[in-house]
Length: 239
Image 1: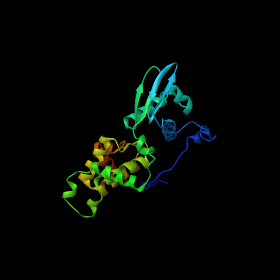
Image 2: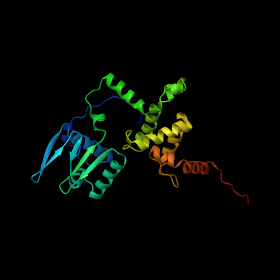
Image 3: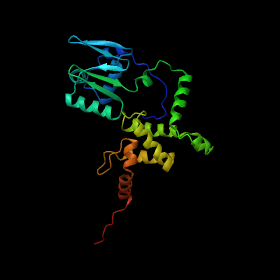
Image 4: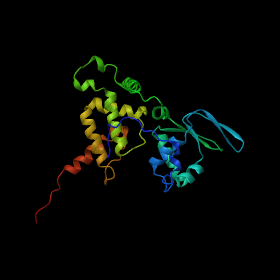
C-alpha cells in the first residue's frame, strides 16, 4: 500500500544478506538500489584490487560491472543501463577506470545519518524551505501560503517516487525547479491533480511518457491533448 506521508526510519542490518531469501532470485531494480546502500562504505577507507590501492570514501562503493552482474544475476548491459538511470536522476556519480567503478551515492548522508531526533526533522524542514521563493513570506499569510512551496514540491516528488519512479531525487535541481514552476503557475491542488492523472495513464497506448516533474512540465500540451481525446465522445453514424 502506497503512502506518501510515511516518515521515520527503519534500521536494516547488513547481515540481512545472510538470509537465504536475499539471493534467492535475480534482483529487482529496487533491491539493487538497496544493495548499493548496504555495501557502501560507512567510513572512509581503501580497497586493493590486483595490487592497486583505491581510496573509497563514506557513501562510496567500488564494484565493477562484472561484480554487480554476477551478484544481481543481471547481464552487464542491464547493469550499465541501471547505473545510467541512477546517474541521470542524480542519485549516483560514477568514476570508471580499467580497474573498477567507484560509485558515489549522492544522498547517502540523508538516508544514513544516525541523527533521528525531532531536532533533526526540524532542521531538515528548515533546510527544505531554502528552496521556497524568498518573497513568499512577504506576500500572503493565508492557510495555503503557510504550506511552503518546498512542502508542495515534496508532495509532487513523493507521488512520482511512490507510484512510478523510485529513483527520483529531491536533490535534483532541474526536477525541483520544474515542480516549483508548476505549483506557482497552477497552484498545488491542480499540480497534484495533473501529477496523479499523468501517473495513472502511464503505459497506456499513445499516452505521453511522464515519470518526473520536468517531463510533466515539458509535456503539459501532450497531456492535455491526450486527456481531451479520451474525454471526447466518438460519433457513431446511424445506419
